[in-house]
Image 1 (cartoon, rainbow, N blue to C red):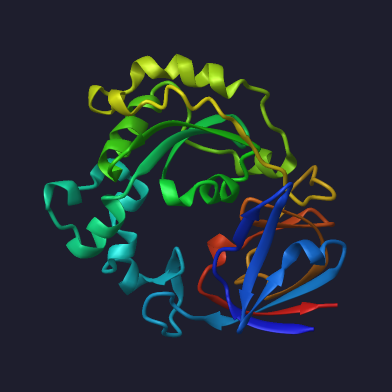
Image 2: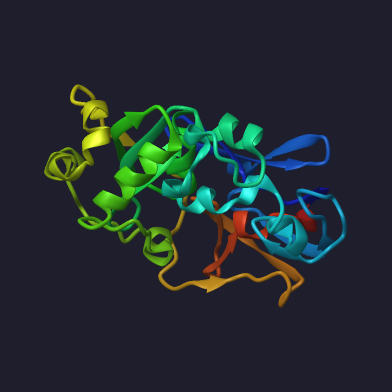
Length: 265
């Protein structure tokens, strides 16, 4: 079977293990059902997720021009503490920025390799945790806007990492840690503005299992621009990565905006 698509990040559903879906043409490909099957990925070109033109992808599925003009990729996306919509101050498009920034946001701890702190919209839980390949996660504070979440993350990352080692995550080399205890240690470092939003009664740790038959012991990253046709047996999906039997891994999210043909053999 062949499927044409412009790659976007995989959609996920949390059950006993995560279910992964890739949008193809007018359908969805259930990747859990493709484990142990040979898959070929053929790179056909680009399609910017913003303007839709066949222009080389620069970052996050956007061409160079769109990356530096679209409100969807303003600096506040990667650095929530730069959010200004709560002050009625525009970055690129105030209406869009208000629609995203003035939503409930959660600061959380996740265990993907080591313990890390992160920020996401409340509506993106547990999607954000799954995208990072977290095996466990817990909420710390729930605040009414992105700015408060951002300054909380900045304060906490002086005491805990805000990065994930994607190589360790894919090898399943995950530190054993008690997230409830870690959260309590960090409570004192939450900024005064966010202290009232500490989730004192939410001690629930969410555990996440992934459809992986075999974890790689070493890793080779697939770059479709350098290897435009790749074929391999799919043995796992974790985070936003496809894992193949020969230890090749493919970051779907990093390849957003790439036009491909996927052949299931």
